[in-house]
Length: 268
Ligand code: DGL
Image (cartoon, rainbow, N blue to C red; front, top):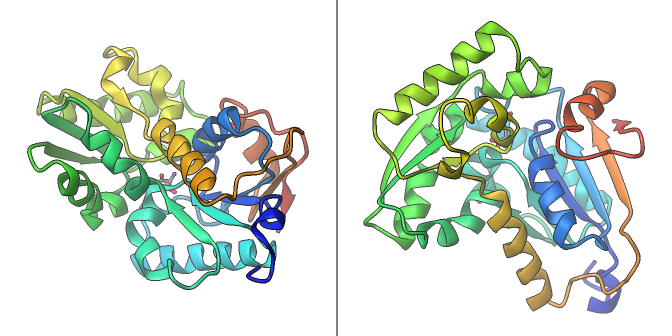
């Protein structure tokens, strides 16, 4: 990739990755503001959920995906996954020839600048355990008190689309109630699967309390690509490829809530 001029690099695809459909919440926001970019999405459904795995396992999964993106000659990789951003990004970020954008570190500055004193974070167990959310937020604003809540089981509700099941409703309400004891001003949906649960969460509170970092993240990537003169200048709609490590049909059906995948996902 180094030998390519920036003009040629501009047309190369951007790789998006997550353990499953969650990253589509970021992908959809990005495509809204940069529809002409060529994109590749990788959903690691064979290994979902990441949030209950060890940091060695999660780093191994991400390495495999980034190696795949390297073979696909991407110009940038987007970690549309809080768990890999928290646990594996630091370990792998210098191993590749392309820029890697992690969701937590890329959106923390903007979130820390919001008018918030008590900030809740819903995330996976691995993300919470890493301590990266409070570290990143307090790096930019040490006055914000951060309240963390791990939500094991929420990712499965989204992947399996079991929103109506009694045990799903009980599990969503349980972590929500535990978080609300802290009386947070705002709550970050610190896992890219969780925006799919807004319908369920909105039964208990005004959805204005929730922050989906994807909005800030997509804008951050856009501005950074422009600064680096890597944004695609084509006026045409970008091409899209979807890859999964298991269950292509399930990926298409569960992902539909956030993004209409025109072509069938390719099983690797
Ligand atoms: N959606 C991912 C995240 O943002 C991963 C969730 C999981 O597989 O546990 O953390």
